[in-house]
Length: 284
Image (cartoon, rainbow, N blue to C red; front, side, top):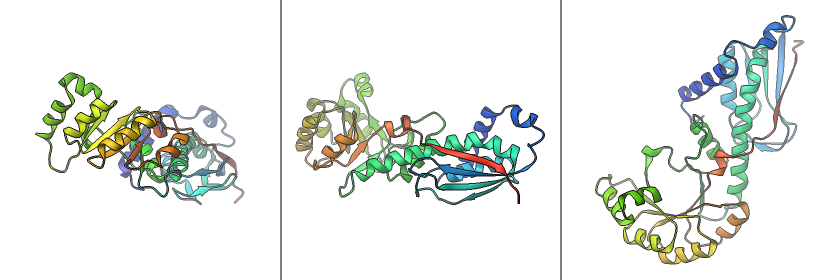
């Protein structure tokens, strides 16, 4: 997995503390079953693109190092409805304690990967990259951006430290777009690109004159985007953002000059896919 293990372990640790700060009362009080050998089957209840299987494994390992987690699928696999994703064996109490945390993570990350796969497929045969944004859930950015990559998308800035993106609020406080670009250009290192967000043709012309490396066309209509692309004419890379839908992507893919399409919805409002966990006694 591409994410450093310490980041995953920190997320898992907080999830366990959140879900059972004082243990699992139900299972702890069912003394007749809590220590019995059990086997659980993680199954897809719909077709999906899997993401987060290694995180799910770490969940059970942290709850009980003696649990056996056997993945039958790997991240990036397309899983059909009713297929078994993994088999988990161990004490019943350990399986119950890890169940919801593992399913929450798998359902959410696989939901992102599934959605991104569907959208990125619409861009096949073009040079346009589907990219995410910083519109992620607090504390889960590393996992969500990983799921985007698994689905075939690309990561925009991971954090504010990763690049320069001059937005409307920056321009408003500085006083002008050209001054904002001039100021950061005088301080940045040679390999850092400057991206500028524009909302109309007037701002676009200023961004072109300022020699911005990337121009984000924010919330523009299809007609405005076509006009903007004609004005830019290869002088900068182009990112299109705002009100992006699958139907609109089918139109945008036909336009020449778009390098990136960014969507915040693929991380901050992706639908979780349906995955369940069937637990039964392990008869050996």
